[in-house]
Image (tube, rainbow, N blue to C red; front, side, top):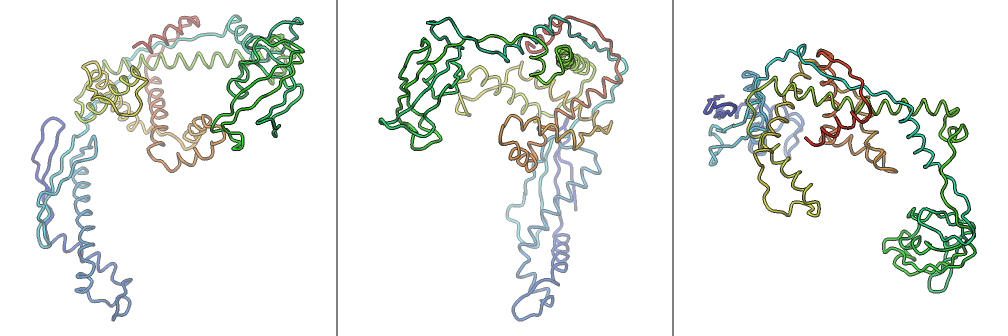
Length: 443
């Protein structure tokens, strides 16, 4: 087998590979000999079919396999010997298109090699870790929000009209074409106006009702309503209003705390403080991570594979265009060309991506099965009732697994670098941390 270099320019590489006909023929014979004991053919006992007949019958098909294996083997040997790592899948093209049995096989292989990435000394990188304590004001604010979610309702003054957000207690009877239907009636039903828990248009018609009033609400069931016999039909609900109640936030005390699973109010405050500080720590980590990436970007420079740079710039441009034109779905739009700004951002992302991957590989950073399982479970919670199907989908989808593994790997590499850098803590206010996070989003 002959491998001849035809291009070595920057990160671009090209080679001509020739697989001799004799080598291919030997590989074909090897495969046929290996398969011979299991082959049956009319007129011959199993395993006794003559090689000449086997070659005539199965030779062409085996030849294709032999060609592919020979070329794959040549590529693997080349990468092992040169140490090159292709940035993307190499392009391989057969050059003797009129090939016939007995001819050598000639192919051209081209690719862009990943650059040599320099070692980095992390000890002189200085990072600032923002620290925010959960003060009483923040805890009280969170408690007030919890109290609102645990709201009660109290009767409004007699004769007061119901407002959006009020609770209306009522009896109702629904009819379609003058006939009552299953599930269309209830007594003492508490309905919060604006909760969108009833058919579209129902709750809006109850705004303004008063206690002891009888109101007919006319609505149409959606076309895709789960009960097919009601789908798309108009219904009239006769509603007898028994009470109109206004929302009242729950009183902040031990009883409310127990409703949230805490032993008492003090314990609930402690839990809230821990949760707030965990949120602050997560935000502060994001700020420190940006500082680390900025430091690495200034510290390290190397050539980038044009194919990776072009692909990333195109993706950035495409994403930003869709954010600016949310009404356009799919890809039915004019060609989007990356700007210099997009290309610069792509350069940073590709460079840092390659650098972190190299650092992680050298440091033997790995994402454990337990960490992957937890990531999948967290993602699955976005699909209530379909968690198991999502879990199975990810298990069978390598690309999805990689999408979930990549950020976990990156975070572990960042932690590995931060452990060797000079990290100083700075206690700041919640507002200061918020400003720092917003600054990240503006960049």
